[in-house]
Amino acid sequence: CANPEQDGSRPNQRAGFSTTSSCAAMGDLPGNDCQKKACVFCLCALVLASVILFGVCMGSYVHLGPDDQVLLKKATGKYVVNGPWSGQLHPFHGQTWRKAMLLDPLQYAIVQDILTSIKRTETGPKLLFLGPYDEVQSTNQKIVLQKHEYVRLTDRSTGEERVWRGPDTVVPEVTETNTGIQVAVFVNVGTAVVTRNKLTGLQDLITTCSNPEGVWFPKALEEVVDIRELIHVLPHEAMVVRDVDGRTTVYSGQEPPSGGQCVSADNVGVGGTAFFLPPYSKIVRMSWSVYTDSNADTGVEPAPAEENPEASPSTSPPPSRRMAAANYHQVGKFERRLSREDVHVFDDKTEERRLESIYVDQLGSSMSTGPKRMVTAIDLRTQKSFYRYEVRTNDNVRLLLEGTIFWNIQDVHKLLNMTSDPEGDVWAKSRSVLIAAISETSLATFMVSFNSIVLNAFDKSKGSTFWTDRGINMESIELNNYKPSDERTADTLQSIIRQTVKRINDLQKQKSENDVLKEKLEADITLEKNMTMLIEQQALNARIVAETAGATEGGRSAMTIGSFMDGLNVTLSNSTERLELYRQHKLLASAQIDTQHLTEGNASIYMSPKDMELRIQLPSHSPEL
Image (cartoon, rainbow, N blue to C red):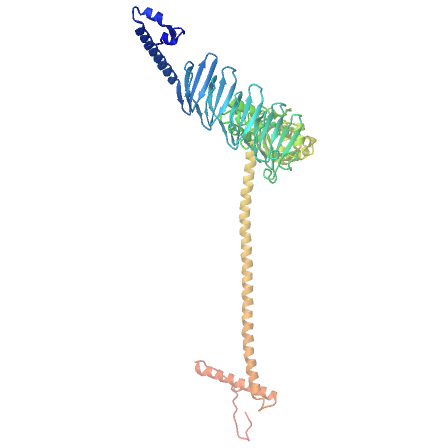
């Protein structure tokens, strides 16, 4: 309390109130007591105000963690305080506590400023503190691209497009959209890709020649139209491709590939070729008549197409068409590999329409109205067509001929210019040739020499320009069977055939018997000849044996005489005397043998004195007897 006397002439006021009025308000209290109480009251009020002010100030003092944020609102706007931070906030500003957003390395967030409506992207890894007017629109995963992947990004505000290739992580802008991760096309010697430029609409074929890296990534405003397999043409085949200007190109396995195609040693074999179907080009598909079995058209009433489902026009190309439809049925597999989200997956109808778009039918008149089959790869080997024709002889006998025609294609260019159904043309032309030839022949003549008639007619037709204009070579025609169309004529022919068969059988039987007799006679003659040869050989052998024995005995005698003569060479020098002595020796030896034989046997023998050489010596006066 202030003392008025001590303050002098200063007004008697302290703490904003008058002691006089205060004391007056307190009644009859003495002056000093009033002043004391006033001072105590002021002091209490001051303490209370200080406590309240301290509590308010200490309540606004905060500690913010690393991920804490306080949004403060005041009359003029908002502001934020981000942690880590320690301090006193304005006690009279509105406070909103919130946590910062943690973005990992594969995340990004789209944030929008609600005052300006501007969006931006915040990429991780980071601890995201929002601004005072920021709102998180979405939190997304980054696009992770491998080395063979790419993503196409389109700006919705400008329409610009960009392609981002891997390996990388991509964060699209807030105005960009994407069609998902797509796989690059692997271009090799067996695979190519057709692309379209969205600005010009032009298509281009990407092969290993234009893209030697092997992996193809599209550029901005460039899209994949088709993935095409290498079409193989075997050595005995040919394919025709027509471009947008109507020009045709023939790919033949018997000719070297053209220089306009990207061809390497890996996709061209010996005696064959291969090619990629260029953009705006289509494979020419021809419609051939079907005469591949013995139940072919008779020429009178063509069989309906539905009776031969394999030959109906709706029949798809054969599975062996490696160079055509079979290859393009595989395109869907490659397109399904382009996108992880099945962006390029087509339904069955779309796939059929797309496969049909690579073919163009060869228009042209046909000489046959029978069932048809679609041909994309022309077989250059020998073709076999069966026929069944009804013809008439000059004596008005109807015959049904059945056989086979062998032909081949030599010039595909001429074939395309003249016809779209070479098999039907061959069938029809052969029919007219046989009808003309047999109409000039009687039945009897035909039955005797039908083969020569057919072959002569065929040989005459070979030189016709009908075949050369179409590039067709007729090899041969065979008649396998013929029969009358009329039943009565058939019965008559059967009777003739039976008589002919009986005559042939009788002749054959007689011939067999004659052959048996002939064989027997020849066997007897051969036997007698062999016996004569045996007798002659035996006589020859006996003579040889005798000559050999005589030669041996003579040699032995010669040796004995030689030895005897040589032994007496010293005693008797005269060879005549030695020879006479040897003769006497042999005579005595022979007589001795004869005497020994006589004495040993029982026979009686009479011998003359001359034979015994006996001499009787008589007296000298008696003559010698």
